[in-house]
Image (tube, rainbow, N blue to C red; front, side):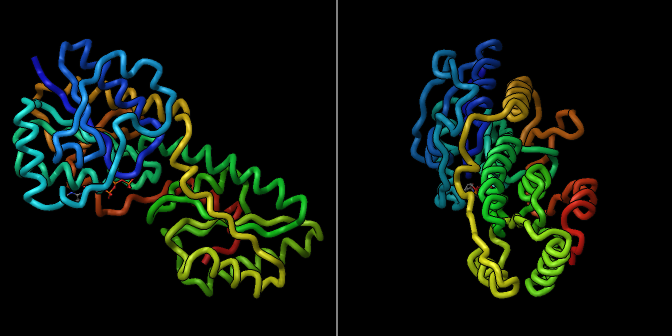
Length: 331
Ligand code: ATP
């Protein structure tokens, strides 16, 4: 019989638990033993693991976070770290390692492949959706919901006081989350890394649009969504610059880590369940070093090296819609 190991690595994302559950149940069906390594790649280096069965994953699909814990692990980037991990996997007689994580985690999985000859499969788990080769990642849809419901609340108070609010959403260096959150919350302007030109042009676009809106109505609130890690000097700098330019107080709001938490929405549960079960169906097949993703509803196998680096494009139809309805003057 086969022995499968699973770990979660990098930023945690809602739906990672749903994925672990699917893997455990599918393994039980196939009569495979399952081991859960804890704390990402640290667990692999320190041989820190637990046996997983039905009991541990009962009532788990709806829970945010990851029961295996996640972590960053610097040592795993070294050859010595990866060698130690390979020895530990061999010691436990693991046939297949399933890594649920982001692009950094897949670089790690690829690195491990140079030292361990077992099967390595990756499943995309990150709220950022910044992994090439898959339309969506586990956790992305829940993070959109969380950002949207938060921005809805900001709008209530913005409307009441006719204020300008600047809301920073996560996404690492990608604008997938910011674009969707902005569209779904009917924000007035969105600043995305993929379309960012320079601060001065963006400031001019926003103030021109804001002044035009003010001509149409005296009573307006205005919400700008900003992708994180983008504005030079951070959100407070932008808030100050806008305050200076518009002569109105601009309130910055950083949504922060709430976007990583919460019960996964059904799309994330289903993606996690589908990919988790599919990964187990590949155990004992001659396929390794790939991430399993989803493109246009179909599961695809993408070599690890194709998952990072090349920046994945935004959905062009959504960009067009955004330009029509929101950023009327986009630099
Ligand atoms: P997220 O994007 O959601 O934060 P991630 O998987 O990209 O998730 P990272 O912190 O980039 O998160 O990577 C997770 C772990 O993967 C790292 O802590 C490290 O252990 C391992 N890793 C990342 N890059 C490499 C690399 N080049 N070689 C070996 N291991 C790596």
